[in-house]
Length: 87
Image (cartoon, rainbow, N blue to C red; front, side, top):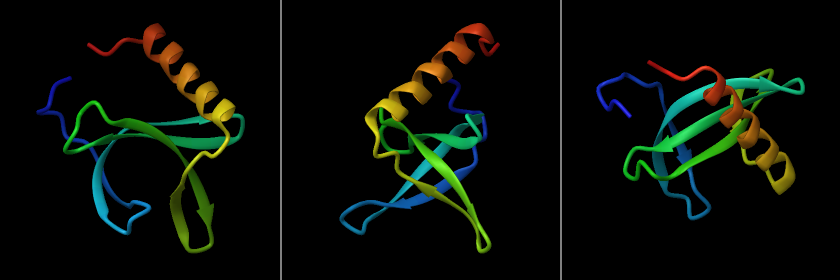
């Protein structure tokens, strides 16, 4: 991965109340939901997906508790990347 490419950043509070910074690697829609693929700023091997939820107050990220939904989203993302590789 080219680390010189600018990525949008988000700060996520973990289960211990600690703030962690992540790069947004991708945003994509699937089955009428929007998902964000996030990569840790401190550990480039730490990548995960969260659902983007819209409210009257704006957007926020929510964890995906259903393992089959998470796997389905990650599989679809991999297929899309394989079909359209970055230059």
